[in-house]
Amino acid sequence: MSPTTTHDGGPTSPLDSRLRDALRTETSGVDASATVWDAIRSAADTVVVPIDAGGRSNVSGTGPGRVGDRRRGQALLLAVAACVAVALIAVGIVVARRDDGRDVYVGPTTTAGTGTTVALDDPLRPTSDLGRALWATAGLRYALEREQLATVAARYDLDPGADQRLANARAATDAAAGEVTDQALPRLGDGETERNARQVLESRMRNLAVIRRAAGDPGSPDASAPNRVGGDTTTILGQYDLTVEAVAVVARIIAKQGGGAANGTQAQREAATRTIQAAQLTEVPGQQAQLFASASAHLAIPVAEDRVGPLDPDTERLLQARHDAASSPEARDGWPGVDPETRSDLAASVNDRTLQTETKIRRNIEGGEPAGGPSLANDLIEETTGRLAQIHRFERRLLSRL
Amino acid sequence: MGADDADEVLGRLFRDEYARLVGLARLLIDTRAEAEELVQEAFARAFAAWDRLDDPAAALPYLRTTVVNLARGGLRRRATARRTPLDPVPDEPGADRAVAATEAQREVLAAVRDLPERQREVVVLRYLLELSTAEAASTLGISEGSVKTHLHRALATLETTLEGAR
Image 1 (cartoon, helix red, strand yellow):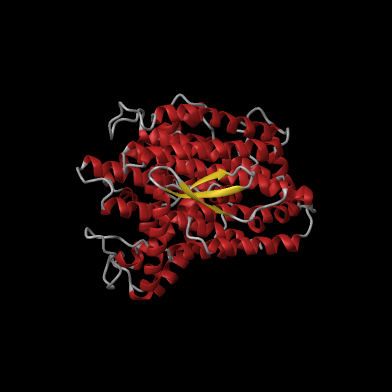
Image 2: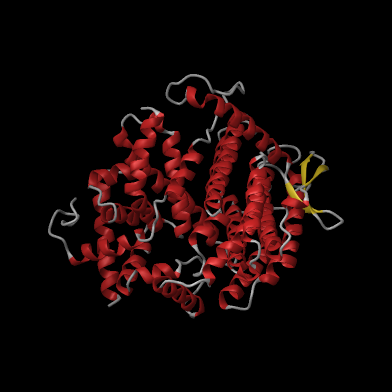
């Protein structure tokens, strides 16, 4: 159909014109930038390597559905990296707080729930109030995502340690939530947007108890897999998503507020560069993301500084409109000032991946396939690879700000 | 088709179609940020699937279909989550969108977003991407007759809704 005819071939109606005009507004301001393209290309280089029924990686050959020669070495490396990451996820990566108050990563844990502590030393840890606040929100976000995945594992009884890992994950979330309360929430001001964000996050954290009750009590003696967990799994996972989203918005608002202590911009950029380089050396998605959050904390001040300088009239008008919208009674969510790019960075979601994995696991069980077989391994590798790809895109966006 | 072809074809599609694909996604899911992430994911998947595409001309339809399918998955997840008795976390477009669109355009956008999922998809494919009936049917994996039916119902609903808003 041409733009000048209606759906039945007749002349353009007033409604047709209104529809076209209105729908086109949704494409305004979209930037097909070189940075985004580079991020897509980089993500595309992350190859998913399927495992066949015998557990062998299918990385040879150049035919359809196989990995080509050009990417074979890369695919092998990524397969190893993905397997390491999956193994670490599978045994439980949690964020906890040591007795001396410094954050450590605890993992990998055994099925009995004990673990090896791996300290992440201070040179990479943010020392400013802003950095600690962003670090705390990033920690809570990933603790929630770990708990979300652990909930899936416990629901389908994927391995003997699933219940213990879920309990560990819940404890880690509680610890991370405490850090957000100590470090992040005090940085939120008393503005309308900040109040709303605080209320939404606090509400979501209160709801966490409801989510957990719906997901069931791991280790309950009267439970029987796979239906021992009450509630619809998709609903439960969706509730985790919404909580993660609330945390991301809080992080975004805090980052925007970070312009007050602008000193040593060059040093911050160098610190961000070092942090990103360190993140590139780790294979653990959660740890990478923590480091990238740290890098974003270093970068938040220069970014916020840009907001303080002279603004062109259009930008001024946009900011005023955002402020007005945030202050108006019609601002139902209180988040209209959230910048899409930064929000996307901080909230780089694994929602679809998690849902796909959960759906596949459910299909495997309903189809009579044993949980934990090659198909599950593929699912987990695919999910982990997807996480890495998203993190890689996040990294490219951060680098573009240096 | 080789990797160089993928760079060239998908690079051109990125320059020419990225904004419209984000517009498509934006009208199917909740937020602009998610829409951009979703379209970027679609391009990344197109690279991964390049060896399976028989013809460079198949790339754009592949991207459209991937965007629609990814949007459906995310939307269902959110819809299910929000039907629960827990406190909802609403998600509204940023005020920059409010600046860009007039009041009348916002009415139309709101009416489109209130349409049932399939009708909304058809309207966006026809009026934003300006696809033919056959192209829209192929993108959605339904018959041309179904596309016409959904579009007819959608336009009738929009007529009523927008007339009532005046």
